[in-house]
Length: 271
Image (cartoon, rainbow, N blue to C red):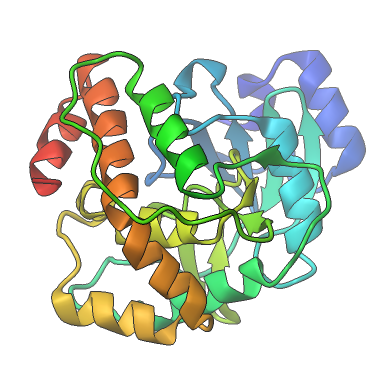
């Protein structure tokens, strides 16, 4: 099957008008993502965003992704965007491997790449993320959506920090170990907020299990935190980690209630 077979004529013309070299290439489905449809087509990746795949914790916005790619590809943190038409995006294919495919893989390069991202201060353009203990507590309750939950954990009352660029979905499946270093894909829910958000997502036992089939070892966790370049952010994450974990448990409970058995098993990793 080629793109001519897969796309509506108007969408095909729109994408081809922005980037024409790939149209006759065959489509090959790509695995790894849990929310959207993704294909390899020559040296491009064709992605179709599914609005119905958004969750209270993870939005699914193709316009936000397009903006993130334009901003972060020049920084060596994301692939190049070549075209966008509605929910369809055409992106450079990154050679390399998804992080976590081998046991005991070193997470230090991931920590350093996230540190590079978090040094980028943006004034606006992305959704605001919860920043500070009070805001994170409110967001956790929002994600839970009234479903039965244990009491919120007690964590220190920390004030907001200066917002920075946050990927907000830094799971192993969205991290590519490319020849030029670690790069991030699937930018459909970026935000401006506390960099501890990305540390919490990457280190989440549930997210590691969902994408690699295992959780991080204590040594891998220590290597990640030691490699992250800002010690104040690490200390902040460690103080807020029980609340981030509570929110992730609420997210997994929501997905399990929607009928996804993988998330029901992921909940066991959060115990």
